[in-house]
Length: 474
Image (cartoon, rainbow, N blue to C red; front, top):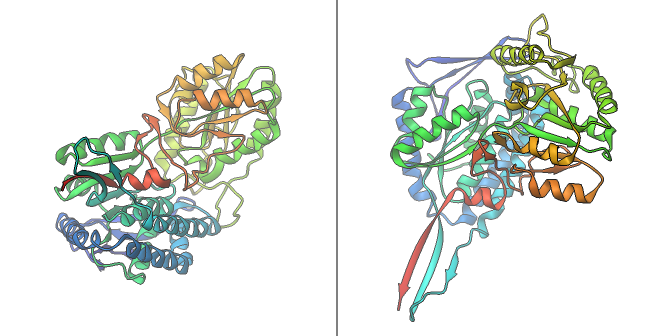
């Protein structure tokens, strides 16, 4: 069993007298590692290290910062086996899936490294003669990155890489459920020779996290997490008016039109819903199917969900794995029970399995209504709710009558339908005849309660900058 220390100012530091996290394998419930939580004193050292390093890091030409990011990507690939092993054990992902996430994280790191020569400002005409107006893109300072458990390696690099290429330094707080892979990444940071203090990776309890987020040196807090966690970050950001970037919950709607390729729609929806046991903020959550094809579609969907195998993914890569912890499973199961009590029909799943591991079978609920909790609230698990509709007008009204607006999906072969849905959907992303996968050259941003700001692409990178106006008279 491994024990991990925190990475502060390019050193792995023991936190004497601090509490320890016990990390369980959610597929077996076995204890796989312990991790020091930083003390308030160590957290202050990490913040001071980041603030001190940022003064030098920002002065380094962006192309030189990009070279460091390429070295870090190389180090991630070189350590993909060890990082992937840690990730598989703490998350219940298959070893192949976990290693693949590390390699993909290296790719997004290289992508942001290439922005080095493309972080541009503007020259704006002045109203006065003999005067230039110059707009500069500048780093914000110290950025706190709050990382979720579901894709912890990829999300860490998704935030860290654009923060670094734009001249910021970072303090990373991994999820308490998946801290081991982050601290394995810290070894890759050391291998890459990143200057001391630029990247600090620390496990923290909520009290210490608040101390760090409200420190005067912190200029930005970026979170991927729940709506509740987002509200807490907004409270933290008020202290020093720090910038907040929030990627929060989702309740991805899927519109299935009569002319859709039903077989493809079913296969895609099941894949989206059961990947990582539904623990994806863009996973399909509520399906709206036109009533003329609903009986056929539901029969196909029910069969596919019922036949989806699940279990310990270390034994079979193709199985659906576990939820991250038992409280998540109990929460989801209670939502399913309440939906049935409220009139939904259980087509398959809906039971808590016996034995070790936090598994929950693929679950399909039909005869759902728009006002049901199971349609309105995120499950973050392998549960689908199906609602039928008569007209596309009715479907659009229901799809948009919602608190969340992250991803959305539409299945149709009619370009007029597709254009209407993509123009009218109230969501930051719309996927046509395919499942969401967040292309990192695009922009991953939620509307409504799904977030503020966003990740990926040029816009995600520029989110880690602030603008300076220089008025030069001559």
